[in-house]
Image (cartoon, rainbow, N blue to C red; front, side, top):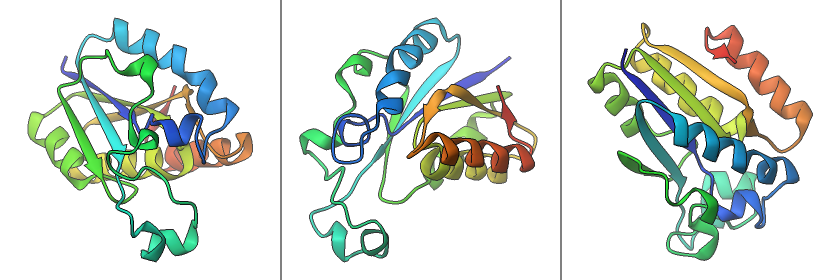
Length: 168
């Protein structure tokens, strides 16, 4: 069985930086342990913005400059940097079409997602992967994800379950 693990946006700005939460900090050791034991391909995504982020549509709705390419906040958190990833996808928006295309091209049987933010980037990538390959099993590791609040985390998990994404 061919499996992939997607570690979504575990970057300094989302963990300890300007958009960080204690919940995001708490999932780091769980993600590390899961990835170290994972028998399959591992991919990272990285939210990647430029200096003009606040002028973008997203920046006008979320006016917090974050994950500017090559800044400290853009870097993957130190505790996860030694995970051997097949590829890292930089993405200027919530989901990565390139990642979804790669997952479909590789014809994985199962794809697992973890990381932040459950209600934005985890959700977007899970939906995109499912849209590009309706037959792949997509599962979100709920204990290895964090969102802005515990309530938004639960809301996102419920929405993904409705879209035939397994919540485990």
